[in-house]
Length: 390
Image (cartoon, rainbow, N blue to C red; front, side, top):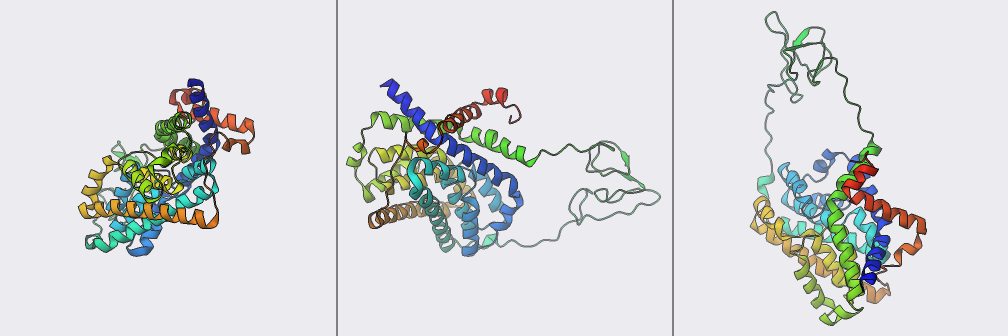
């Protein structure tokens, strides 16, 4: 039995490795090539347009239910409305480019397409409910005059002080001055013909890290460190279910709405990221859980967890927190029921393919992907074999 367990866990890893690496690379490209300030611009404003922009912007981002909280709070404090913040909070952890890739590998194209669409619907519906029940008048930020900056490296509205006989001060963040100026950013008292934004006169700036290397560092180090433990848990659980749970066993607990409500109870308090939830969902499918119930687990598991509720209450209030939970629950069950109806009417099939999905790829690529994923996930090993990634 132990040999079967190890073989099944390895089969799940082989199925997911290439697609997970592909998703991680896509996530790295998004992180590096989309400017950080674009997030604040795109989710600003109120109403349906802001809700839709927030959902679309958050969907591909590689953040899970705890990682998305600081980003969403930053958006809120930067002026985003509550409804846009809620929309971003839901769409971001429910799906990502890496989780879609793994979903395709383990559950096929229908679930890979339907899952992110369901996440967007869930996010936008809950955002609109938030707008209806909470009049976010406090978010209409008042415009204030920019104060004169004390530091010459402050805002562009800083007051320029022209040099005279007693004091030699100027805008030392501008172009090079012919006169001697007092450096407000240097440790030295004075610097001649240099920008105060450098640490020393004549010091050449550090060579910027190429964007391709930033992409690889984020995907192969930062991001994988965030998800490695939970991904390992998900792969092991899927292997255990494949080994010890007979096919169809969990179907006895019900299908349709009853099974979806059970998945709500299981998924809401759980902390698990979208990628790690995917192999578990594939195991549930093999055990007889209906695709609609599996979808509910895939949506509510990553989007909610007990640890985040207190922070949500503090930042958004009790009313919005309740709408957040109710909106996710109703939308997830609704999208699950719609999926069941579509499968019946169209003849589409959603089946887990653990142990077989990697057959579509060359064996050398599958094994190389698994080995690379193991090296990246084990930090000490990665630092020895791939020191450039850190």
